[in-house]
Amino acid sequence: MKLITIHTLIGLLSVSFILTGCGGPPQNNPLLSQAQTEFKSAESDPVVVSKAPVALKEAEEALEQSEKIWKEKGKKELIEHYAYIAQQKSKIAKETAKLNAAQDEVGRAEGERNQVLIEARRAEAIAAEQRAQKALGEVKTVRAEAEKARQEARELANRLSEMEARQSERGMVLTLSDVLFDFDSATLKSGANKAVSELASFMQEYPKRTIQIEGFTDSVGSAEYNQNLSQRRAEALKNALMNNGVSGQRIRTIGYGKEYPVASNATEAGKQQNRRVEIIISNEDGVVKQR
Amino acid sequence: MRKLILLTVVAVVMGACASTKPPSEKLTRVKSSIQQAEQVGADDFAPLEIREARKKLDQAQELVGKKKYEEAKLMADRAMVDADLAQIKTLSEKSQKAVNELRESIRVLKQEIQNNLNK
Image (cartoon, rainbow over all chains, first blue to last red; front, side, top):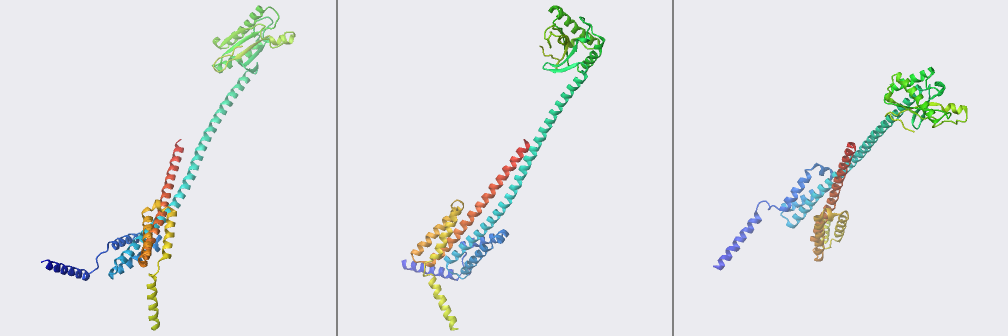
């Protein structure tokens, strides 16, 4: 029983050996198939073909070698050796192509980067130019405003040229000399008419401004008398202006008497200078700075 | 005719001789290829491939020790393609990385320009 079994087994084994030996095409080798697939995918890529021809050729030769040995039913080790070489060479070809493409890409990207940098500078320049234009515009506006103010001041001065006008820290100050008043009198002489009408038309033109009229005398006579005289002279001018259409609300009067002399009372010429009426023109807010 | 036979004999003898000597020169070239790959950074960019190359080099040297020169030669050839692949793969990955970084820097630049213009 035992013997029969062993014999049968040996017989079966022999049959199977013979079958294998006689079998048509050799059995597929997985490593060779893998190498063929890898090579085909490399070969079908035009970039690989153009960028890595040497590695591709070496892969092809190794693959052919592997296939040849396989067809001749040669050693499995050799089939797989060349299959492996073919597979790795195919991968090398693909990586070579990728490297080439990446290097081209670096070149392109660098070009683009430079372009962007140029644009960045241009954008920065445009922004700077816009800022400069804006600043320039502001400067022009300020200058125009200053010019306008100066022009206005010049006009003001010109309009009041008949009177002695000067710029002081309190604003524009006009001085009416006492020659426009009779001696010891608060009555305006007719010679003052021109000055009064000029002042009135000025005030109509600049309705926001107010004036303060201050009267002064020399030191001859009592303080009380002089204060009274200076007050009346200031009032006289105010009345004249009101007769010319200026609202009394815009005119304030003060008599300072012999206070605040502008010259020495020791000489006749000095006394003459001290006898005066000053008109202080307010700023645009209608405010007059007080002494 | 006799000459031809003689040449064939010589060639056969020489061919036989090739596998009776250790493939020292081949192994040296494999080592230098592995070194080159290491220098460009294969351990970071192609770790599997460089590892495979080193392993096959060791195996080839073992085979030399066992005087299996023909097998050692084949193993060295395989180690060589692994080392070459490791090197080229490393270079290609690094280039790709450079491309990506450049693209990113361009994107950031463009963003900044846009921000500047919107100010």
